[in-house]
Image 1 (cartoon, rainbow, N blue to C red):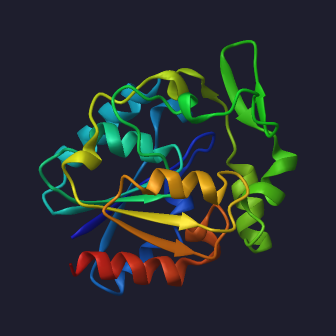
Image 2 (cartoon, rainbow, N blue to C red; image 1 turned 135 degrees about the vertical axis):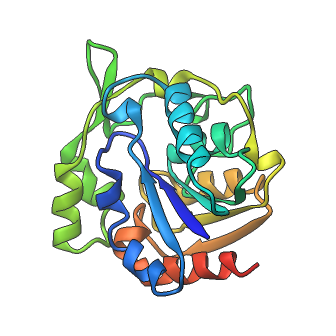
Length: 224
């Protein structure tokens, strides 16, 4: 079985974000693959990202546990209907239906940690990374995360998924109870659409700050 990780918005280099998880999962016989979202590298929107995930899944012969982190949950929702996907894991993420964009879950005012640019992209203000998203991360993880921030087209946030994979696939929602970027109450509302809910006492990035605990959860899911 393979765990496929789909990273969140406004960052690049997915393999780095999962680098603390891959060796831990391998110790339990689970291989890993990661997807570099095109919208965070060359451009495009949610559908571009979904097509990239579909292509990746089509080249995997094993059964897949598909992990979507934050915005990555939108991509998992769009592309996670592939026949080899056994389980969806939403990690402080969004379970949209086909009428809902990520932007539709936002409040009336722009989030203060986001910066909108004239070219139609947006980015995370680097000075907000530590306090809002990485307060439990060690210094090495924090510096690595900061170095991988990038711009992303707003189209990724305004497109709606073409499928709602959680309606047909088993799913687990992982609430990160100390996340200051996606508030826990927002996560718990999203989690009502999942089959199972697990809470972690974690910031926004448990694969960096709590890799052992996250590994144990994914291993348990693989045995179901």
